[in-house]
Image: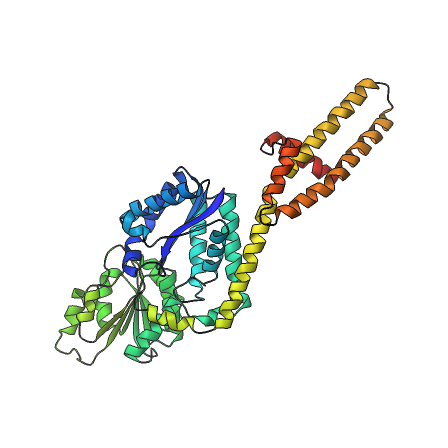
Length: 443
């Protein structure tokens, strides 16, 4: 079984297509189970963020796996397969592992080095665990990816190589509004990205941060966590809050528009409305929360994920040394992971070999007891211990060596040769259990 990645991101597809392909909520659960239940897949997890949708799967066949996953992505997104396939990328085996580690390290993010992706991978990991769609292979891969991401952030300056999407978006906002300090801010949503936006605005000295969310208790908790003045409102108060805010950041999981131009009409046409007043909307949601028509309202500017691409390129130019450090970390971690995986793959063969040797020893000792029924018990035990020790010493060097050889690329050929030479069947559960007990008793 091998790891396969099929996906699309801001690098391969326009935001408009990403918006259509995004899956969340019940749709994400349905896609998760549909992929796991298709013919060529045994395990799966799905990372679905504002700028990427990626399916991680363990498959028995490359072409069958790619076809099945691509068709299911098209079916559940509603994007025709012919259109979707032009923007899909595929990674397999070693390249799949390298891609997952690079994503976790922030190298593939819209803004290089942003740390939100670690939380998003962790969320995908937990969902797959809760839904029982992953097994040992993906469990180990995603756990290792999270450790690689943490290492990249702790050991390098990748965090300075690029800010989060929120920070980049607020830099764009300042070009339109001026300094954020003292401004009235409105954050729509209370998820991870919205929480980051609220915290960033608070640290920047916003005069007030208002949190609007469909689950009011979540908005209250977020507002209470901020250092600057903050309050929570219900979604039916959103129109009033929009009239009062200078800077609006929206990132919800809604499938339709949350903010429309009509919601801004009342206050802009009021008798006391100032023609010089400026407002800035930062839409970090996918699908988009803010109707593009708000740009037609006087004094209003809007930036979405497409507009942040320019900022992304600017961020890429910063901290090249840190980026190279992270690339080296990813390369080293991929090599270590693949070596460990190859060594683990040969373990059943080693266990089967030791089990077969134990069976031969037991059979010969039984034969000896039958031929010499009057043998002294102490002598029998000494003979048995000696024979087992001889078998163990004969097996020690080849089993250690085959594990070392298996850790190298193409090392599985040595395990194949061992199985062929000794007629081993490492899939026999009774052999594995028995050999484990034998090895445990010798340590």
